[in-house]
Image (cartoon, rainbow, N blue to C red; front, side):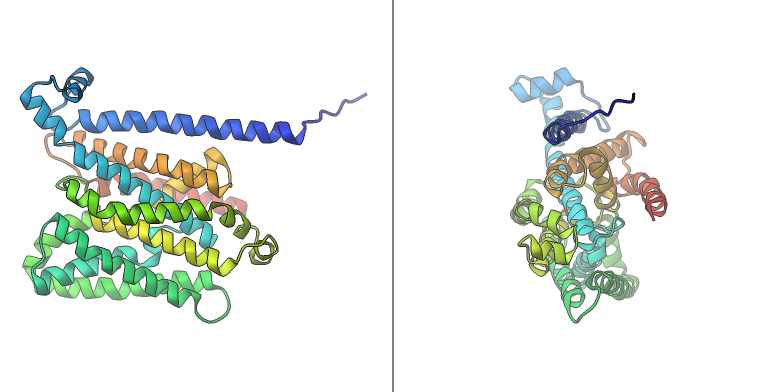
Length: 343
């Protein structure tokens, strides 16, 4: 006679929570290793002991200078990785499209257009100046796309994607026209547009911090409502959530996060696309856990890509935006295959 095993619902829930906690702990360990590698590796490799000596204040003067010069890019890598990963998670949740990422809102194109305009007509230059000029362009582009996507009736997600694609195409045409007609603008624009953590200081970090903090707090507040929205608008409304407000809040948070990261370090592709897929595989579909884990996995991935870029062509350096593109392309192919398999 066959026996039927019975797993109590409470036990299954505890097992799921334990698995998620283990995933978060593993993510923190990986992030810690990425942080250590970020201050150890570069054109001149320093040992872990030398880094500890610098942190304790007893390090050699030359080693101290080398290690301390890596602090700003490490801090920027953590904050930009968090922003891009959480923004990607929000975008995929709000649009219910697992191929959505921050560039979908036209934020990258808006920031780029703003940088080019400021450089061409007002002579803006330097990392901090680029930060402050790129931020309003990114925010305006995100708001315009959101406004078009939420106007009228029908599938707002489809309109959102189309609005982002159209605005990006128009802005990129404008950028090409300006940079081709003004070579000096192209010289200053080409470094920023690749996406890099190097060459920035803590002033850029402090400039992006308020926008990143506001977007992340809003994302945490919306976690439970995004779970309801994933069940459909009618079900979300029955559970007490306002689908329009949840969607607008999620897009606003994604815009703030994406704009801050893009303005600070340039448009870095695929982090906002690849990390949400890794997160869902690790912690499941609960957006509260997804957002928390994205804030760990995003920085770990971006810092790891930055370290790879520093050592693969030593003593020269490969921009982190190029490295993430190489990493993200296979991730995109895997995501498409999984979506096709689930269709």
